[in-house]
Image 1 (cartoon, rainbow, N blue to C red):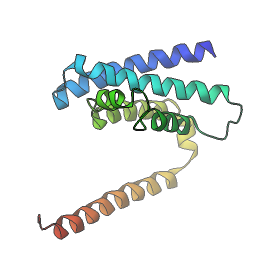
Image 2: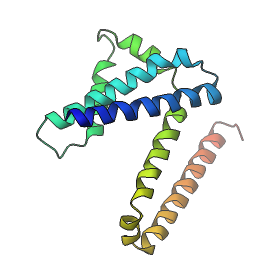
Image 3: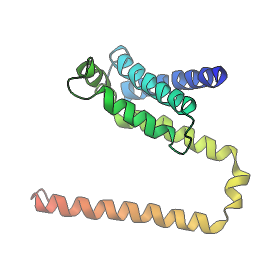
Image 4: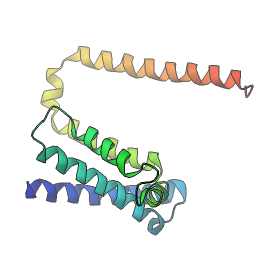
Amino acid sequence: MLKNIQEWVMLFLIIGFIIMIGNWIGYDVMPLQAVPGILTLALLSLAGLIIHRVIPYKKIPSIAYIGILAFIVTIPGMPGSEQMVTWTSEVNLLAIATPILAYAGISIGRSWTDFAKLGWRTLVIGMFVLLGTYLGSALIAEIVLRIQGII
């Protein structure tokens, strides 16, 4: 398990650095201003991954442990919750999503043989899902903006 923790820490350091640069370039948040929020998010994620490994019930994904842990530590009234919210509010969501999605893409790219086994139908379905998501989002945005009188 120590080897896993070392790999996770290294991964969090690399992704944290990329998040910090993206946050700075894209959203004008100075790197030192974002470091506490990035460290908080990385530590919560690391704690959730460790809890997932320690608890023998493996049917619950690690993201659930991370989310529950983050929810608990940011409940109003919990010691330090206001500070954690202040720190993490300096980190923009899109600055986080970009390196995470890139990492997911690399992970899929490493196993092209597995991806190819899914067949061409998976690609077609994936394109329809993306198209449907885009059109659905555009439709909802159009309705809401019309109701508000913006357009």
